[in-house]
Image 1: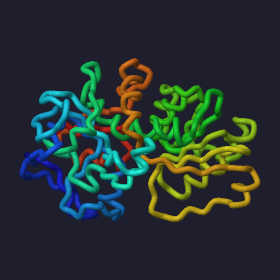
Image 2: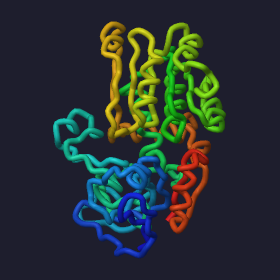
Image 3: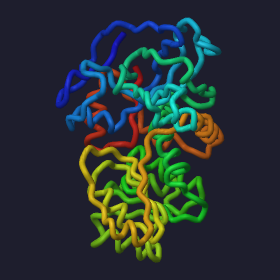
Image 4: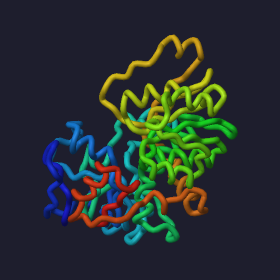
Length: 340
């Protein structure tokens, strides 16, 4: 099969022929129809962040496709089934899985990180992890549910705990941030979207943001937002992964507010302990989503309450994947999908 292989940081992916994997007991071989291109992969490519599996490794963790071949004991899964593969795979038996927190499983495995991913024609995954995708949702678009939609959904509902009437700020309106905007709007919040990219701010307004702010066009972003909101926001989401923007998001909170960090950074971040204590602020992290949340999300997409069309900017052949990452680096589009 053809796959895009990472051989080390600061190198382009090598599109090459590799052996097609075979499913073992309890596994299935999935023919990949689409795999979303995520900024997480740029951490491996450009920033020296190491994958758990040593290179060479096939990247790609936002995948949907059809079941091609079954291993022994693959349960109710059938060849030809249209499926979504969660970005993170859980064991189902540890203390966190038993409490419905599969996304922080003790034995968590991530496609394109702990194991070969889906920038390839085929990928092998546990049959028990697959999520059925209805025929009404194109698989190329469905692929981004695995991370770009599910991660914001979990963050808004379970970590940010957004309630109707809350005022929410979203710092960073890439693929994840824009879906925070639409998930928070769906939850009944008044959303303020913050980004330096005017095109992304336009999309944020389409997805429900009632205010948009370009930090380059205001003197002090914290003062500007406090003026807009009469004191600050109830919940702020950081969806970039930068200590500076984490501090910005923290500065937007009103008394009793909550900062939810979705963006990944390996760097330390310093926040005011005095404000944290005196204003009873909260800081929480958010990773992926639990297995039980995927059917909820797919139902909302099928009902038209969560949009994928405006998030997926287009499809890119596997042979052109490095051009696709150049688009990500330039900030073009929102979410590009590789179609092996």
